[in-house]
Image 1 (spheres, helix red, strand yellow):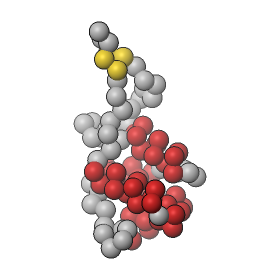
Image 2 (cartoon, helix red, strand yellow; image 1 turned 180 degrees about the horizontal axis):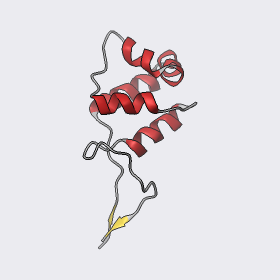
Image 3 (cartoon, one colour; image 1 turned 60 degrees about the vertical axis):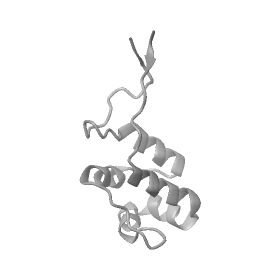
Image 4 (cartoon, helix red, strand yellow; image 1 turned 60 degrees about the horizontal axis):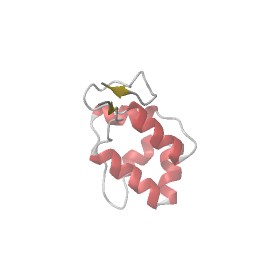
Length: 94
């Protein structure tokens, strides 16, 4: 039986970052226009404790919508290898 291939799940810290962007329009606009400033300013008095790979990933993303931003995070975030996936299409492992 084939097992569906799953995209890696973003870390808890990236999930917190995306949650802040979902619930607050001002933070979302800042994240999309100036991710470095968004990371440095934190949200609601809390900072985002991203590791070096996560921070580099967030700073490398260029997106105009949060949906596009989140898709790029999901596509490129690989905690096991710390490298972007080459194959972006779902595949099955037999």
